[in-house]
Length: 559
Image (tube, rainbow, N blue to C red; front, top):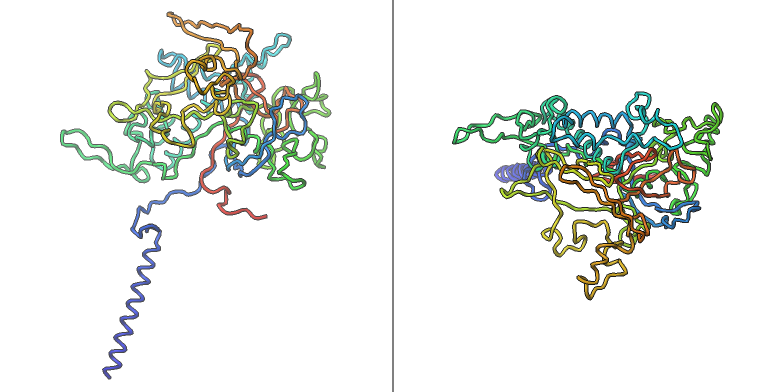
């Protein structure tokens, strides 16, 4: 009898131990426990998948032959084929339109009124140059006066925008999108982004992430801490002042903010335009695709649209669209976006309509020996400026920074609410192998080491000439200064020793336009233009890096 009781007791103890281990196992595998330590961690949920920003479509990255063209009648020798790999990213479905840019102009005019002496140059710096339509022997005043603002052209791509202005538009777009995401998540006063915004309360994502209480000029009525906007009331401090508000602010780990909008790199643009993802009839590694669509012709071969032009381009001398009512591409100048079929990535007008700015500084050679992954030339690394009090230095309305273009036009490049930036220094570069200075535009091409005047034995005296006038890229150096009365003094470089137009301020633009022959529709063709000049045939679209998995589905694609 005692034996049975002992056996029953042992069985009960065994069951309790099993249940205990099961309970511990269940607890350790809960979503709130750390896989590293087993400790309970913050169980707040953050989105692990990046959502596409407004206007963007997904472009899955991969390898491609960059620079391979089918025709090279210009013999520029700047299309040497190189194998490159591009990470996944997002890109605007269409070029930025007049309607989109007018939204930007209206916002700038409201927040930085030109009547205010502090902001008199801000609005003028973002307005497109509508005079690009004028021609000495052509009547184009209709476009000069109407193209940007008339509703008939609302969905046409914006032109007359230089590279610097396009970059600033992308920055503005980043802030407005992230503002909307804060409001959506209850961390921003409703409608504050449209009703309460002033120059002093201009929102900046990086400022918010570094010091949330400094965003919107430190206005605690707009920036709402606390989960889902449930702001906690601060208790009074010892000296009678209100203590800082407690609660949760959005952080980078919250997964709320999107990466910045920006211009695509040349590699990204070419990869997206070629859209090899939809091609199976040849070896894509050879890069023999002539247009963003299949085939070697500019007309559609499909039964429903047979004979229709697939892009807007110049078909011949004096022929910008074909015969009226027959064989017409539907446009003589630019055309509204989405009028021609999209490529296999779902991107419209990657050939024709307008050529497009990309992020890269132009050089004839793409240096794949230095890098064949996310290639880009133009990196200029900066860091947040820290004041004497040890805090980040936020720009005020009195410290707006401007860039004076070669034609004397001033463009604002920093605004109130942003964190002041300074070049990285030895604190960031010391003993690093991947970068050693802030400005890397001339890396391996055009810097003093790559000049024929460079002498490693005497870098101080022998290389003075190489520093002043590079032998490789000795382009004209026009000088714009301001006199004591604030008037522009423009001095033209009349030297007869200049041998090139290439310098650190010329940017690549890609794709053919309404002014170009079919030759330039090849995604691999590349040209350059000064970054502070605009034309009637160059527009732009924005891109955004993808974080996380290469595929949108987060798993390996299967055929």
